[in-house]
Image 1 (cartoon, one colour):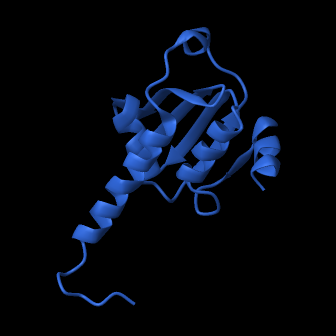
Image 2 (tube, rainbow, N blue to C red; image 1 turned 30 degrees about the horizontal axis):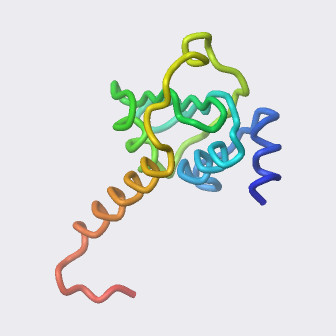
Length: 126
């Protein structure tokens, strides 16, 4: 299924985050070594993730850049996205932000911690 998603993305995929969350989108681009820009239209504004051969080289969201912007985008579950299979000249030459899988796991851990602190202590989860 990742190969099918990657082919759809490579042709300029458009969709809703309720159908395909940012973590899955980003992981698909990484695993399939895609190059391009993933643009988001979110309630809090626009956001972008730029990938070169699957590595994250730029992230922007709510006046944040880099890892913190990436972590903020991962938290979103409502909005739209579009993949453009092209980067700017500066993004083509940019260094990667960090080890992708490590950043993805850190972002998901942060989300889990935020969700766990919202529960009442001793609450039985169903």
